[in-house]
Amino acid sequence: MNSYNKALTEGVNNIRTESISRSKRRELAIGYLFLWPTITLLSIFMFYPLLKTSYLSLFSTNIRGQTVAFIGIDNYTRLLGSADFYSSLLTTVLFTVYTVPTGIFLALLLAVLSHGKKRGMRGFQFVFCLPLAVSVGTASVIWTLILNPTVGIFNYALTQIGLQPVGWLIDADTALYAVSIATVWMNSGFLFIILLAGLQGIPDDLYEAATIDGAGPVRSFMNITIPLLSPTIFFVTIVSVIDAFQTFGQINIMTQGGPMGSTKVFVYALYQEAFRNFQYGPACARAIVLFVIILILTGIQFKIGEKKVHYQ
Image (cartoon, rainbow, N blue to C red; front, side, top):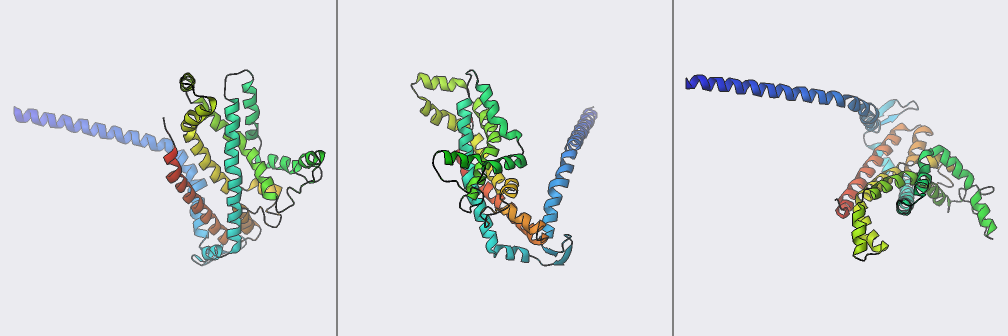
Protein backbone atom coordinates (compact mmCIF):
# COMPACT_ATOMS: atom_id res chain seq x y z
CA MET A 1 0.00 0.00 0.00
CA ASN A 2 2.85 2.34 0.87
CA SER A 3 4.61 1.64 -2.41
CA TYR A 4 1.37 2.34 -4.27
CA ASN A 5 0.91 5.69 -2.49
CA LYS A 6 4.54 6.55 -3.15
CA ALA A 7 4.21 5.76 -6.84
CA LEU A 8 0.99 7.75 -7.04
CA THR A 9 2.61 10.75 -5.33
CA GLU A 10 5.60 10.60 -7.67
CA GLY A 11 3.28 10.40 -10.66
CA VAL A 12 1.30 13.42 -9.51
CA ASN A 13 4.53 15.38 -8.87
CA ASN A 14 5.86 14.47 -12.33
CA ILE A 15 2.63 15.59 -13.96
CA ARG A 16 2.68 18.84 -11.97
CA THR A 17 6.36 19.48 -12.84
CA GLU A 18 5.71 18.77 -16.50
CA SER A 19 2.69 21.08 -16.45
CA ILE A 20 4.71 23.89 -14.82
CA SER A 21 7.54 23.38 -17.31
CA ARG A 22 5.09 23.48 -20.22
CA SER A 23 3.52 26.64 -18.81
CA LYS A 24 6.94 28.31 -18.48
CA ARG A 25 7.85 27.38 -22.04
CA ARG A 26 4.56 28.83 -23.24
CA GLU A 27 5.14 32.08 -21.32
CA LEU A 28 8.70 32.26 -22.67
CA ALA A 29 7.46 31.74 -26.23
CA ILE A 30 4.82 34.45 -25.79
CA GLY A 31 7.47 36.82 -24.39
CA TYR A 32 9.77 36.25 -27.38
CA LEU A 33 6.79 36.71 -29.69
CA PHE A 34 6.16 40.18 -28.23
CA LEU A 35 9.88 41.01 -28.39
CA TRP A 36 10.23 39.86 -31.98
CA PRO A 37 9.16 43.17 -33.65
CA THR A 38 11.63 45.12 -31.49
CA ILE A 39 14.42 42.61 -32.10
CA THR A 40 13.73 42.73 -35.84
CA LEU A 41 13.82 46.54 -35.98
CA LEU A 42 16.99 46.73 -33.88
CA SER A 43 18.63 44.11 -36.07
CA ILE A 44 17.78 45.99 -39.27
CA PHE A 45 18.52 49.53 -38.15
CA MET A 46 21.20 49.05 -35.47
CA PHE A 47 22.97 45.69 -35.29
CA TYR A 48 23.37 45.11 -39.04
CA PRO A 49 24.66 48.66 -39.76
CA LEU A 50 27.13 48.32 -36.88
CA LEU A 51 28.43 45.00 -38.18
CA LYS A 52 28.52 46.29 -41.76
CA THR A 53 30.42 49.41 -40.69
CA SER A 54 32.92 47.30 -38.76
CA TYR A 55 33.37 45.08 -41.79
CA LEU A 56 33.89 47.95 -44.26
CA SER A 57 36.38 49.65 -41.95
CA LEU A 58 38.80 46.78 -42.65
CA PHE A 59 38.69 47.20 -46.44
CA SER A 60 39.53 49.71 -49.12
CA THR A 61 36.47 50.54 -51.22
CA ASN A 62 35.57 52.08 -54.56
CA ILE A 63 33.27 55.09 -55.04
CA ARG A 64 30.25 52.78 -54.93
CA GLY A 65 31.18 51.50 -51.48
CA GLN A 66 32.13 48.05 -52.77
CA THR A 67 35.10 46.35 -51.12
CA VAL A 68 38.28 46.21 -53.18
CA ALA A 69 40.95 44.78 -50.91
CA PHE A 70 41.34 43.71 -47.31
CA ILE A 71 43.74 46.06 -45.53
CA GLY A 72 43.17 45.15 -41.89
CA ILE A 73 43.60 48.02 -39.44
CA ASP A 74 45.33 50.36 -41.92
CA ASN A 75 42.29 52.65 -41.99
CA TYR A 76 42.51 52.98 -38.22
CA THR A 77 46.24 53.60 -38.13
CA ARG A 78 46.03 56.26 -40.84
CA LEU A 79 43.10 57.89 -39.05
CA LEU A 80 44.84 57.98 -35.67
CA GLY A 81 47.95 59.37 -37.32
CA SER A 82 46.21 62.21 -39.15
CA ALA A 83 46.07 65.79 -37.90
CA ASP A 84 42.49 66.15 -39.17
CA PHE A 85 41.32 63.47 -36.73
CA TYR A 86 42.64 65.31 -33.68
CA SER A 87 41.52 68.70 -34.99
CA SER A 88 37.92 67.52 -35.48
CA LEU A 89 37.99 65.73 -32.13
CA LEU A 90 39.20 68.88 -30.35
CA THR A 91 36.50 70.94 -32.07
CA THR A 92 33.89 68.41 -30.94
CA VAL A 93 35.16 68.49 -27.36
CA LEU A 94 35.05 72.30 -27.32
CA PHE A 95 31.56 72.24 -28.81
CA THR A 96 30.48 69.82 -26.08
CA VAL A 97 31.99 72.00 -23.36
CA TYR A 98 30.23 75.08 -24.76
CA THR A 99 26.80 73.52 -25.17
CA VAL A 100 26.23 70.83 -22.52
CA PRO A 101 26.77 72.75 -19.23
CA THR A 102 25.20 75.91 -20.65
CA GLY A 103 22.16 74.06 -22.00
CA ILE A 104 21.54 72.16 -18.76
CA PHE A 105 21.98 75.29 -16.63
CA LEU A 106 19.61 77.33 -18.80
CA ALA A 107 16.97 74.58 -18.90
CA LEU A 108 17.22 74.07 -15.13
CA LEU A 109 16.88 77.81 -14.53
CA LEU A 110 13.77 77.99 -16.71
CA ALA A 111 12.32 74.87 -15.09
CA VAL A 112 12.81 76.26 -11.58
CA LEU A 113 11.35 79.66 -12.50
CA SER A 114 8.27 78.18 -14.18
CA HIS A 115 7.74 75.37 -11.67
CA GLY A 116 4.89 76.41 -9.46
CA LYS A 117 1.17 76.76 -9.19
CA LYS A 118 1.02 80.48 -9.76
CA ARG A 119 -1.29 81.83 -12.41
CA GLY A 120 0.21 82.00 -15.90
CA MET A 121 2.96 79.43 -15.34
CA ARG A 122 1.40 77.04 -17.86
CA GLY A 123 1.86 79.65 -20.56
CA PHE A 124 5.55 80.06 -19.74
CA GLN A 125 6.02 76.29 -19.72
CA PHE A 126 4.42 76.07 -23.15
CA VAL A 127 6.71 78.78 -24.54
CA PHE A 128 9.84 77.16 -23.08
CA CYS A 129 8.88 73.83 -24.69
CA LEU A 130 8.51 75.32 -28.18
CA PRO A 131 12.12 74.70 -29.38
CA LEU A 132 11.36 70.99 -29.18
CA ALA A 133 8.74 71.40 -31.93
CA VAL A 134 11.20 73.04 -34.34
CA SER A 135 13.32 70.73 -36.50
CA VAL A 136 17.10 71.09 -36.63
CA GLY A 137 16.93 72.18 -40.27
CA THR A 138 14.35 74.89 -39.67
CA ALA A 139 16.07 76.13 -36.52
CA SER A 140 19.43 76.25 -38.31
CA VAL A 141 18.00 78.39 -41.12
CA ILE A 142 16.38 80.73 -38.60
CA TRP A 143 19.60 81.14 -36.63
CA THR A 144 21.59 81.64 -39.84
CA LEU A 145 19.35 84.62 -40.59
CA ILE A 146 19.55 85.90 -37.01
CA LEU A 147 23.36 85.71 -37.08
CA ASN A 148 23.72 87.13 -40.59
CA PRO A 149 26.54 89.73 -40.50
CA THR A 150 24.60 92.33 -42.54
CA VAL A 151 20.88 91.83 -41.92
CA GLY A 152 20.93 89.73 -38.74
CA ILE A 153 19.13 90.97 -35.65
CA PHE A 154 22.15 90.30 -33.41
CA ASN A 155 24.35 92.73 -35.29
CA TYR A 156 21.50 95.22 -35.56
CA ALA A 157 21.21 95.18 -31.77
CA LEU A 158 24.97 95.71 -31.43
CA THR A 159 24.94 98.70 -33.75
CA GLN A 160 22.06 100.23 -31.81
CA ILE A 161 24.17 100.32 -28.65
CA GLY A 162 27.24 101.65 -30.45
CA LEU A 163 29.20 98.42 -30.94
CA GLN A 164 30.77 97.08 -34.11
CA PRO A 165 29.03 94.24 -36.04
CA VAL A 166 30.44 90.75 -35.55
CA GLY A 167 30.95 88.18 -38.31
CA TRP A 168 29.30 85.45 -36.28
CA LEU A 169 29.38 82.67 -38.87
CA ILE A 170 32.10 83.96 -41.18
CA ASP A 171 34.80 84.58 -38.58
CA ALA A 172 36.85 81.59 -37.43
CA ASP A 173 37.09 83.07 -33.92
CA THR A 174 33.33 83.31 -33.39
CA ALA A 175 31.76 80.64 -35.63
CA LEU A 176 31.89 77.83 -33.07
CA TYR A 177 30.42 80.10 -30.39
CA ALA A 178 27.63 81.11 -32.75
CA VAL A 179 26.72 77.51 -33.60
CA SER A 180 26.89 76.65 -29.90
CA ILE A 181 24.40 79.41 -29.05
CA ALA A 182 22.01 78.09 -31.68
CA THR A 183 22.45 74.52 -30.41
CA VAL A 184 21.73 75.49 -26.82
CA TRP A 185 18.44 77.01 -27.96
CA MET A 186 17.59 73.96 -30.08
CA ASN A 187 18.14 71.57 -27.15
CA SER A 188 16.52 73.76 -24.51
CA GLY A 189 12.98 72.45 -25.12
CA PHE A 190 13.85 68.80 -24.54
CA LEU A 191 16.04 69.52 -21.52
CA PHE A 192 13.39 71.81 -20.04
CA ILE A 193 10.68 69.14 -20.26
CA ILE A 194 12.86 66.47 -18.64
CA LEU A 195 14.04 68.71 -15.81
CA LEU A 196 10.55 70.11 -15.20
CA ALA A 197 9.23 66.57 -14.93
CA GLY A 198 11.95 65.83 -12.38
CA LEU A 199 11.02 68.92 -10.36
CA GLN A 200 7.37 67.96 -10.37
CA GLY A 201 8.32 64.59 -8.89
CA ILE A 202 9.76 66.20 -5.73
CA PRO A 203 7.15 66.21 -2.91
CA ASP A 204 6.02 69.65 -1.74
CA ASP A 205 6.07 68.41 1.86
CA LEU A 206 9.86 68.57 1.87
CA TYR A 207 9.86 72.26 0.97
CA GLU A 208 7.19 73.00 3.56
CA ALA A 209 9.19 71.20 6.24
CA ALA A 210 12.33 73.11 5.22
CA THR A 211 10.45 76.41 5.43
CA ILE A 212 9.24 75.56 8.92
CA ASP A 213 12.83 74.80 9.93
CA GLY A 214 13.85 78.26 8.70
CA ALA A 215 15.52 77.31 5.43
CA GLY A 216 15.46 79.93 2.69
CA PRO A 217 14.97 79.39 -1.05
CA VAL A 218 18.70 79.02 -1.77
CA ARG A 219 19.26 76.51 1.01
CA SER A 220 16.17 74.53 0.01
CA PHE A 221 17.37 74.49 -3.58
CA MET A 222 20.85 73.24 -2.68
CA ASN A 223 19.81 70.73 -0.01
CA ILE A 224 16.53 69.44 -1.46
CA THR A 225 16.12 70.26 -5.15
CA ILE A 226 19.61 69.43 -6.39
CA PRO A 227 20.00 66.10 -4.50
CA LEU A 228 16.55 64.84 -5.49
CA LEU A 229 16.95 66.11 -9.05
CA SER A 230 20.43 64.57 -9.42
CA PRO A 231 19.17 61.41 -11.23
CA THR A 232 17.46 63.61 -13.83
CA ILE A 233 20.51 65.85 -14.20
CA PHE A 234 22.69 62.77 -14.56
CA PHE A 235 20.44 61.46 -17.32
CA VAL A 236 20.31 64.71 -19.31
CA THR A 237 24.09 65.10 -18.97
CA ILE A 238 24.75 61.71 -20.55
CA VAL A 239 22.20 62.27 -23.30
CA SER A 240 23.51 65.78 -24.02
CA VAL A 241 27.13 64.63 -24.29
CA ILE A 242 26.19 61.86 -26.71
CA ASP A 243 24.09 64.28 -28.75
CA ALA A 244 26.92 66.84 -28.85
CA PHE A 245 29.39 64.26 -30.17
CA GLN A 246 26.88 63.30 -32.88
CA THR A 247 26.07 66.86 -33.96
CA PHE A 248 25.79 67.30 -37.71
CA GLY A 249 22.64 69.09 -38.93
CA GLN A 250 23.29 72.62 -37.73
CA ILE A 251 26.96 72.44 -38.71
CA ASN A 252 26.07 71.33 -42.24
CA ILE A 253 23.47 74.08 -42.72
CA MET A 254 25.04 76.99 -40.87
CA THR A 255 28.79 76.75 -41.56
CA GLN A 256 29.58 73.52 -43.48
CA GLY A 257 32.57 73.03 -41.21
CA GLY A 258 34.03 76.48 -41.87
CA PRO A 259 35.36 79.01 -41.79
CA MET A 260 38.85 77.51 -41.98
CA GLY A 261 37.63 74.31 -40.37
CA SER A 262 36.76 76.05 -37.09
CA THR A 263 33.40 74.22 -36.83
CA LYS A 264 34.44 70.95 -38.44
CA VAL A 265 33.20 68.56 -35.78
CA PHE A 266 33.81 64.82 -35.81
CA VAL A 267 30.61 63.73 -37.55
CA TYR A 268 30.91 66.42 -40.21
CA ALA A 269 34.44 65.22 -40.97
CA LEU A 270 33.01 61.71 -41.26
CA TYR A 271 30.36 62.98 -43.66
CA GLN A 272 32.99 64.66 -45.84
CA GLU A 273 35.10 61.52 -45.90
CA ALA A 274 32.20 59.31 -46.99
CA PHE A 275 29.97 61.45 -49.20
CA ARG A 276 32.39 63.98 -50.68
CA ASN A 277 35.65 62.05 -50.88
CA PHE A 278 33.88 58.68 -51.32
CA GLN A 279 36.35 57.05 -48.94
CA TYR A 280 33.93 54.69 -47.25
CA GLY A 281 36.55 52.53 -45.55
CA PRO A 282 38.19 55.41 -43.63
CA ALA A 283 34.75 56.89 -42.93
CA CYS A 284 33.60 53.60 -41.39
CA ALA A 285 36.78 53.48 -39.31
CA ARG A 286 36.04 57.00 -38.11
CA ALA A 287 32.49 55.94 -37.21
CA ILE A 288 33.74 52.97 -35.16
CA VAL A 289 36.26 55.20 -33.36
CA LEU A 290 33.44 57.64 -32.57
CA PHE A 291 31.36 54.76 -31.20
CA VAL A 292 34.25 53.70 -28.95
CA ILE A 293 34.84 57.29 -27.77
CA ILE A 294 31.17 57.75 -26.84
CA LEU A 295 31.17 54.35 -25.12
CA ILE A 296 34.22 55.29 -23.05
CA LEU A 297 32.83 58.72 -22.15
CA THR A 298 29.52 57.20 -21.08
CA GLY A 299 31.33 54.62 -18.96
CA ILE A 300 33.41 57.35 -17.29
CA GLN A 301 30.28 59.37 -16.55
CA PHE A 302 28.62 56.33 -14.97
CA LYS A 303 31.77 55.54 -13.00
CA ILE A 304 32.24 59.05 -11.63
CA GLY A 305 28.88 60.77 -11.86
CA GLU A 306 26.65 58.03 -10.50
CA LYS A 307 28.39 58.23 -7.12
CA LYS A 308 26.96 61.72 -6.67
CA VAL A 309 23.41 60.73 -7.64
CA HIS A 310 20.91 60.46 -4.78
CA TYR A 311 18.02 58.10 -5.40
CA GLN A 312 14.93 58.31 -3.24
